[in-house]
Length: 434
Image 1 (cartoon, rainbow, N blue to C red):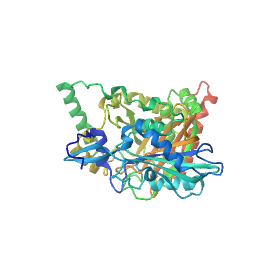
Image 2 (cartoon, rainbow, N blue to C red):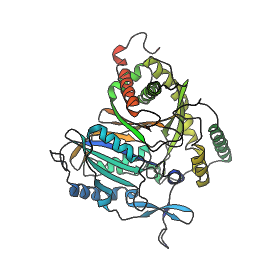
Image 3 (cartoon, one colour):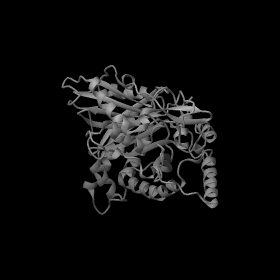
């Protein structure tokens, strides 16, 4: 409970829905995993000066209020309340792992590890042994605190290279702007849209597939990198964007992973793709949902990118106009949504792509060389891919139910497809584009 007589800020409906959706078997938190090179707090032998690291973090916390707040109940409401930050608990050193594979396995376990709710919903974990001459870093954030875009802002606040103010620390321009009242027609359209999207959950759009089912506790994680410039140029030759290239590579990798298991490949793999909304307000979450039926069975990467680009162009504006999923705008609706999505047959994969920091970051003087975002899988969807553009690379993370899909098989196929799309620019000719 909050303190008597103290007025606390209620969670926005979107932020509150992320608390309600959280469950012991489906932890609603995501993380950024990275590699630190020697420098600053990281010695040449990989030792980390935690005392200095905590001191640097203590100086940055005031730049973002949510980092010093926890979620509490005030009657029927969920509210943000001030909370003391014990950096000995929030910034910790873990046992060493055995190289990149050990680092991926650790991150897989963290995706099913609940976050303590008696303190602010974030933590920073230092992981020795994550790579040769490098130290692993894992920043865990509960989804109520931030969506992908807001998380990048938090990362820049906490891990920013400089000691001065950053653009990321500034509140969104819409945070204090009054929202116009919606007309009756607009409210009726929202109601109709919500009914249509709710009933769509029950449509058997997908044949039975191993991609859907109860998500087990054993998770798989794989990290994949690709050249951002090469990918952008290759996608452009087919009339697409980096996001279209990621979707094209993801569906090709899903096909490969299904074949590796001897499973049938559906005619399309419908993917849920978040799109940023212009009006964020003071919420940490402001995304619409774009459903893209990614076509399978197309061996040519250029044709696949072009076909997907045509789909996304037609659907992105509609997703932004509809806004967040209607059921998650109330507590009752979110409880209903949490139950429905465990039985849906509309979505088979999550794919998220977030623009990353525009400049290299450092953690207390230690250069951040890699940064992979890892998002939760929820409902009955057993496979997800998340990507972050950072320092000239597209850093991708695969997260799956390890008993349904091989993260390594999917990751290997994803890397190969991203490389094929990146090579399209060098194959430009009359036939490119299909």
